[in-house]
Length: 555
Picture (cartoon, one colour):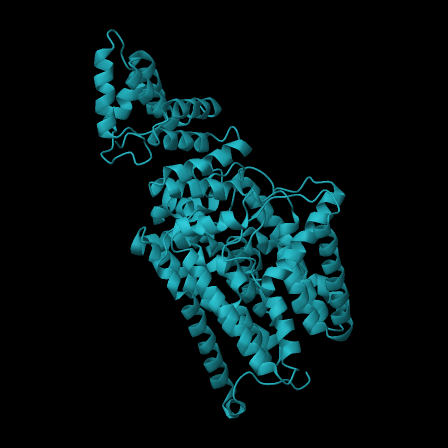
């Protein structure tokens, strides 16, 4: 490789190579920890609540067998505003959560600390991998320095739910490292662990094929034979996952033109956010590009340019072409458009992929005489953005306000912002959010119920009653809506109807002691009416003493 400018003092080259690698790796590790140290005080947010608090299986190590035989909590969680069912099979992630729980139970700092430390491990391992494959320690340090501070990767670290991306990256890097050394038993083991951490690890064989062509010239007959065991593991994994979740992998059903147009937009957006993030908080609601708009046209220009540059690298610099392929291979999981819930893509998609563009960028920047100040400027700007973005994950109201400002069409962000406003006692602002949500999803039961709660707190009893009725009609299993209707009818003096809704509520929820007492009083007033033992009677026996926070019975 031609001479490149060094991103560290030249006299360091006189050190013993092991010492130099250790010092540079330590610098990267310390930087990685420092960038995300502010997250240790952040709360659990959004899906993190579901996978840590609501997945009771991870609260005991006795459930380890369940991690591998059943899928984790699905993303159809009513409280989080999701409608689509996503079944994730990530037993290694659940195992890590279970281990953390044994140490700190539900203390958020411990889960954030795991993300921060594992992210630092990913950065260090990537440094050693780039050094090994490219044969230039200066290039490796510069590339991974750019990678470590890249703001788009932040979502995977800020968010406890991003642990799956970090673990997958960790094991995928180890798999490539051992594969390059022909230690296939270790590489296959790391590959299996990557698959059990996050589904996108199925793309690793693509990376390995690219490695064969880039680094093992003259072994044409063996290239695909070397990768064959990894393809067999993918097939076996798909079968095991299908048994665990009860269905095969979800595949897009879009027609060709909308699919390729949308993929072009996804590629363009991933390239863009790898260079500079879109916002302090960015969410990308699912939006299929059916027509050739200016956005789609420009995206195709970006794709064509990217393909042309890739061809140039393939002809002139195979090792750089490998890292260029690395980027596009890892983001290609998002080409399965329409099968990721409510989202077109997420920033977590570049958590590992960004390494590819960082290596290519570092190589060309280091050939420039102003390389060092240029890299220093990027590290400073991206580092400050990364730290600043972490503050938005510290306070849920601030986070969701920023998310809605970036993507007003995102119903889930609107719903969660409404919940945060309601928790803060800002009922008028919350009502505005829920109103926008139910306009787009008229049968979103939890949004209707929460809208009714806000109207009730704003003294609009008639409006609240209408929303609660719609919420219960949309989902008869919505115990909160049933309770609110029971409370309304009780206040109106219609005790028989009130008791009917209280009965429906008790079939769906554990009844707090103070509410069970109220229901008994209503029962006494309704002569001749008895509550079946399987409903309120059972719930009353299992009553919990904590208050019902989401109930309107707070006055």
